[in-house]
Image (cartoon, rainbow, N blue to C red; front, side, top):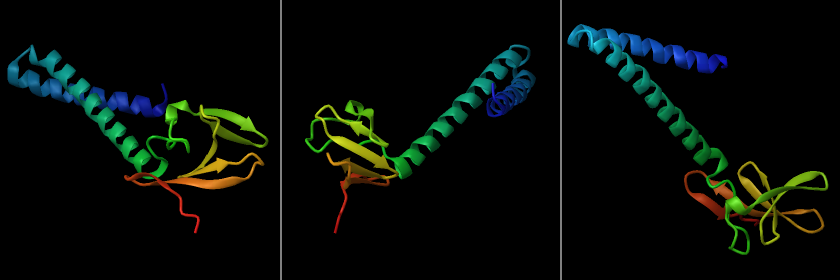
Length: 134
């Protein structure tokens, strides 16, 4: 367990204790354990949902989802890409044999001579678009 997980656990435990005390005061002895469970697990569920929503928004804004566009042939989706070492760089090879390199929001097609040609760019919250080379 790292420090972040420990703080998350302690926060949820504290919320459970407070919620259990409030429910116990209101409903008697059955409220203590039930209130603790509802408070601790409810807090954990809400915080996990919040963290996942923030991670999704960050991915949609900066990295792209799906992580790779459809290949040039239009047949391969992002799970069909496989990383492969090519000379001094790592490229992603689709099942059709196309080779692509991702650099931030840009995806470049790697040509047989090793040079790169712009292919697609990720536009935040809109998706993959052909990159203008003009």
